[in-house]
Length: 282
Ligand SMILES: NC(=O)c1ccc[n+]([C@@H]2O[C@H](COP(=O)([O-])OP(=O)(O)OC[C@H]3O[C@@H](n4cnc5c(N)ncnc54)[C@H](OP(=O)(O)O)[C@@H]3O)[C@@H](O)[C@H]2O)c1
Image 1 (tube, rainbow, N blue to C red):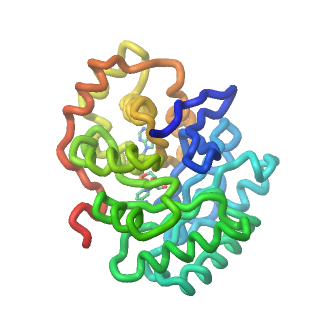
Image 2 (image 1 turned 180 degrees about the vertical axis):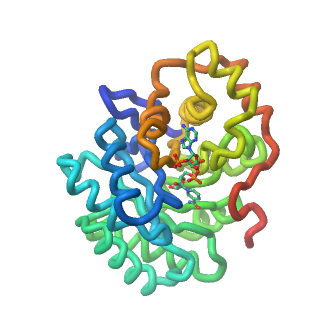
Image 3 (image 1 turned 45 degrees about the horizontal axis):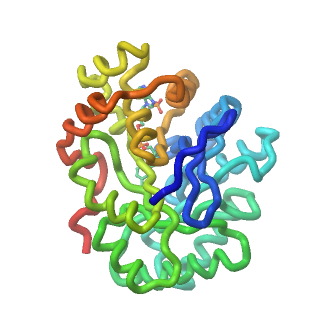
């Protein structure tokens, strides 16, 4: 099981199976336009206390993430950076080249977490071996997967020496029960679950249930969704390029949802997939 959440002065973290901490809330930068938009969003997040940024080579904004970290004045070791290998780059050698490109784009010496973005069939075990290799020279601290459902996790668990530290999947109350099997597979194997699209890409933020549960605490629907993920023990990756929302999404540590509230939220499941659904992927 994932170890207990520790709340520090600024940064709440979860401890991964490798014993390294991962900050509980990360700024997502998918669909965050390359250039000043992304750079300013990351700078603002770091200024507010975020210490975790989630990018990917396909987002085309790794360079802006790196620039912002450089300009933030923070020590590199204070910021947890994730990037991801895109689908066209699978295979052992391709993965090593793709990682070099990502690191160069980021302008960093290492990344904290490197993920396989999607469980592309055929080469993903070779790809995983390349990720294992990348941890040996210290340019990647931890490795993991994304969009892996139980069938994909079983494959890597049965055929590899190294267990993924993390599995990043779409998770919110609107798809939690339908993803529970995958979540439980992760928990049984001490794999940290990261919740992406935790705000449903904005689609459910007008749900009156969220408004009602947030009202007694003076919290918004977005904050209710992020708090739900935190209480489930997930790392949560809300995306925003808007300063006020970046602040709002981080302001979730001064209230608690009751067991009844959590159950009410779990009951909202409608197997929502706001992007491609990996559940039937071979
Ligand atoms: N591994 C994968 O395959 C995968 C797939 C999807 C996402 N992700 C990761 O997860 C992150 C988050 O997911 P996501 O980008 O799909 O969507 P999301 O975080 O669920 O929602 C982002 C949307 O909500 C809006 N928003 C943010 N905070 C808000 C608030 N407090 N009130 C109202 N609206 C708010 C944002 O608008 P503004 O930006 O305009 O403020 C944006 O339109 C991504 O950025 C990425 O890092 C990973």
